[in-house]
Length: 140
Image (cartoon, rainbow, N blue to C red; front, side, top):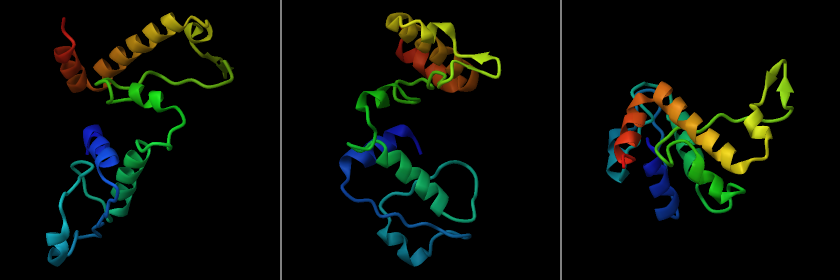
């Protein structure tokens, strides 16, 4: 399952019907009703409800009215080809760990630049495949 699939399901369908396999899968006699099979990855679970919930959660959050700030969806992991930047909440210092000073500076341009650099570093470290793909698409 990938973000483009979630986008397609969220914006091009009014209804989704999910058939969840259990232990050995779905009864072969109902497979003619299936128009698309979706997998979360190369592993096996005892039931299909957990992947179905993951799919539904990914789709529903892209539907209008679910997320408060629609613009925030544009900056999340996989939307721009990079992983998300680190997130911080309050308090500014927790157990001697501080929120980076730049995020408390009020300098929105510097914060945006810092976040972008963090996305690049995080993606390169955690998902070199995505980073290479991003580099290929963003060479000037």
